Amino acid sequence: MNKKQIAITLGVMCVLLTSGIIVQVNTIKKNSISNNIKTSNNDLRDEVLKWKEKYERTYLDLQESGNRLEKVRQEASKNNNSFTEMEQELKSMNSLLGLTDLTGEGIIITVADNENASIKDEDLSDELVHNTDIIELVNELKNTGAEAISINGQRVVSTTAIDCVGAVITVNGVKINSPFTISAIGNRERLNGITRPGSYIEIMEEYGIVVEVKKSAEVTIPKYNKVMNAKYMSIKK
Image 1 (cartoon, rainbow, N blue to C red):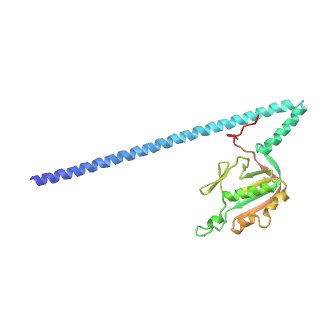
Image 2 (image 1 turned 45 degrees about the vertical axis):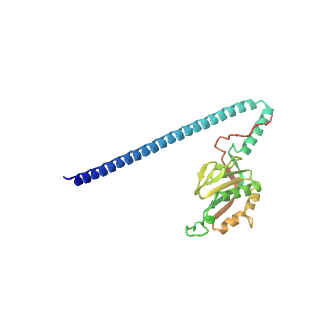
Image 3 (image 1 turned 180 degrees about the horizontal axis):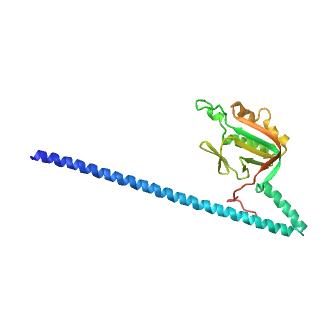
């Protein structure tokens, strides 16, 4: 074997050795990245589970405390007229805050996306129900005297956020989908004014959005089922 052949052989061996090293390094990198992602996902899942467990425990403690407080109130109010008045006032305030289940006359509005909507439509966005549409309807209900409102079973309170996350609407952080059911307690005849000519409902219907409004003698609205936290408010002394 002459020098030229030896040089060629060594060159080929170097190329093969370098290729092998590169493949091995890339394999190690991929395995390392995969392991890091798995570890990160596991840590994130564990953290979510811990917070979920903490929330459920706190909510159960809150319910138990509420039940114990209710028993104390009942015992204390048996022979105390002034306490009975305070109890009624507290229940009234809790109703306004959204902390109790309520029933009463009112209306039920069902809103759904245009059944004939297609991705080929230029106005597709207008044919779907958005969080802004729900907000408009809630505001109109408040303006017409609604005393309590819920959306797909989620009570609307002072801290309620109606947001859009991708193609999904969230109320109180809970994802809801079409059709949307908005229940409102109040004078049903007055609340039914939401269907007046030129109303927001009429505008939605022009785009093919399905809207149905029913007056009812008995509308049920559940209480707000989360913990209210005031981060910035404090009672003035």
